[in-house]
Length: 309
Image 1 (cartoon, rainbow, N blue to C red):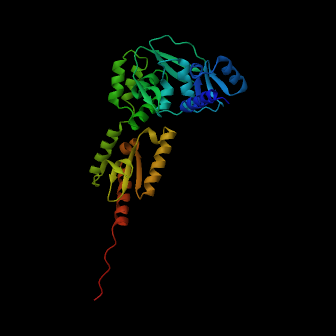
Image 2: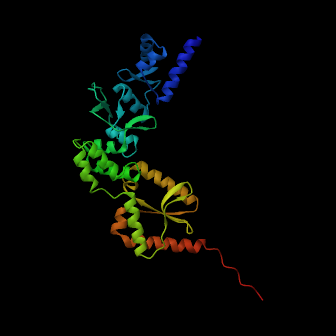
Image 3: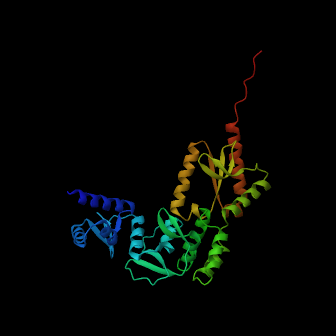
């Protein structure tokens, strides 16, 4: 293989690696491949067409990130992931296997099979793991115009629990786009969704105070993790769960892995939902009191043996 050809092959491989296994025709031409070479690679199975002018390199087992990048390449310069695709990127909704959704600014989009292309005059754009994506608050606004009510409620609560958005940032997004099709639905949902983590913590502290239980440290570090409530002497942690514990599989699994690690470090981890704190306060305080009493006894240093005379 000639040196120049080797350099081109290496450049194509590096590009595919950076872009989760996908490349565009324009990029391949810029690297030095001719249209005839691209056609031969397509015929020989070294490239696989995903969209017009966008290919998977070597195989079609493209991960979600690669499919998202392929949609962005197909949509053209300035396209950003939006709507359900942005929600997947931010991990506030799971991947349902549907088409990728992107938004372009200030131009009329061309039809792209397998891609839903939206338009906007202005847009809050962020960066998530190298992917251009609408910010969390704007993502929620876009979702509210199309997503079913239960999925939308889950996404809104999940974004707050993961601390990606707050009611204030969501309301600001609504004010910035008052005529957006999702504005009214999202504003109404803000009034009925589960409370923010701050409100959950305040409700918990008030419940513990009224029950006469020791006040924990709030948002304190336990090992590498920030705990909602921590009794350091007893090594007891209490976490307040929103939808993340029961509405999103990924968050559920992350929480359980975190709990297992904390338990291995010698902590007891309790989790209560907003419904339990508000509707079953006796259950919450009873369980906390039992665990604190047990841990106080089990962590107390043994008493000195009696001295024989």
